[in-house]
Structures are given as structure tokens and as C-alpha cells.
Image (cartoon, rainbow, N blue to C red):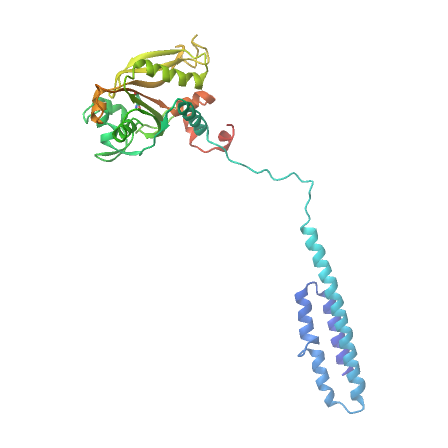
Length: 339
Ligand code: DAH
């Protein structure tokens, strides 16, 4: 029995020295020192010994058990200490490291300029109107004096949802929607997304943006149109901006014009940017056609108005010297973070 005790004792000591975590220590305790452990079961075998041997052997088993239990506790303590040290080492924070940069997003260049344009018009008393991009053919064409067989439809081919529903090709249908629902005086701008079945390249996209403007009141004249648009363009492009109007045709305005501003690169001299013209076209405009007013239940003998429309992409491209409008939608942060 003595040999057995010695063997168990040596085995336990070896296992203790090998154990390096709390779980394996607990296993050793259960297997050798616990209620059903090997050393404990030796105590039960004492009965087989002669009465003379029993006390000495019992004492020996108990001594060994106590010694091993003490060693186990010690080992437990040192492993716990080691684990704590490791934990602390792993959680150490180097306060001298540079902090991780927080990447904040920002406003898209298109929206930067749109907000600026909205602010300019708001200062002049305009409110902002919003309407559907999936639009009735009636609002997009018919009510704007473009019947089904009108040649102007060729230049604004679009995506048809059905015969009578289209993706709007212009923000001009907002003129009709606003006039149907409001009595003059009317003074709105309507920015929004428009669609045409154009192939995508550096200057064309099937999806782009326009800003529509509409003013209707008693006694509105072409002079009001000029005053409003020139005030707007001077705020956006600078007080030294010069203007030029070229006659044009839009079915829903009469007379109609395109407005040019002096090239901000050469100030009218002629350069590569303005293709030697000295001027750059920025918008279409005109006096609201009497037929359009009538369609909306506004008496053209009592009221008159002017309207204008400009393409937002072109304004933004000029502002930031961007030569490819695909950059606006590609979501390349190297492009976007420059603004
Ligand atoms: N809707 C026209 C276009 O997309 C632009 C335009 C021209 C709008 C003249 C107007 C206007 O309101 O009066 O080509």
C-alpha cells in the first residue's frame, strides 16, 4: 500500500507541474483527491489491513493528501496570477499610438450646389415644389403644349411605363401641377431628377437633374424674367457676369430664349472652355404660353408668367471643373472627398 501511495503522489506531482490552466487543475483534484479520487479510495481500503498497520497507513494517506492539496492550491494561485498577467499584457493600451481617424461623410457636390441655388431663390421669395418622377404623359407633354405627334417629343425620348405614364423627361410638368393646385401669385422652383433614353457618356446620362422655375402673377413681363435670372446668375457666378439671350423654341413658352453668361474663364474674350464663343449657355426660359395658362384654369388675359429650366449637372461641372458627369454616380471616394 505504501508503494501505491508513493506512486499516486509522484504521479499527481508530475501532473501538477504540467498543468497550466484552471481546468486541468480541477481535473487532477477530481481524479485523485476528490471524493471518488484514487487517493480517497485508498482510505476505504484501510479496512483490509491488520489493526496494527491501519493507524500508521491512515495517517500517511492523510498526510500525502493534505500535502498534495496544498500543492494544488499553490499551483492554482500561480496559474491565476499568470493568467491575470497575460490578460493585462494583452489589454495594454499604447496611449502614444495615433487615434483611429473617424471618417465622416459629407454632402455630395451636386447637393452642395443645389442648396446654394435653392438659397439664392429662397432669398428672392421663391418656395420649393416637389413632384413625381413617374409622371403622366399629360403633365410631361400634353399640358405643356406637346401633343402626341409633336416633333419635340423626338428630342425627349424617354422610358414609357405605359402609353400614358412616363419617367419625366423634364421638371417642366411641375409647372402644370403647381398651377393646377395654386392660385397666382405663384413663385416656385422645382428641382428634381429627370430621365431620357440617352446613352451614357461624359456629358450625357439617362438620369440627370433639372431645376424648374415658375412665376405667375398680374403684370409679369420679360423684364421680370431677365431681372430674376440675372440676379440669380450673378449670385452664382459673380457680379461681373455678363448676359446674352438667344431666341429659341420651347412649346410651352412664348417668346422663348436661351440665356448665356459670359465665360467665367475668359470673361468674353473666347477660349477653349467656351469654344471661342465668349459665352456659355446656362438655361432655357420664356414667357408662359397663354395656352398653358388656360389649360391650368388661369386666365391669360388677367395673368402672365415666366418659366425657366436649367440642368444641375452642367452647373456643378463648371463650378468644380469636372469633365465627366459619370463621376457623380460612381461613388468613388477619391473623387467625392475633394469637395
Ligand atoms: N424643359 C426644358 C428642357 O428640358 C427646359 C426649359 C426651357 C424649361 C424653357 C422651362 C423653359 O421652364 O421656360 O429642355
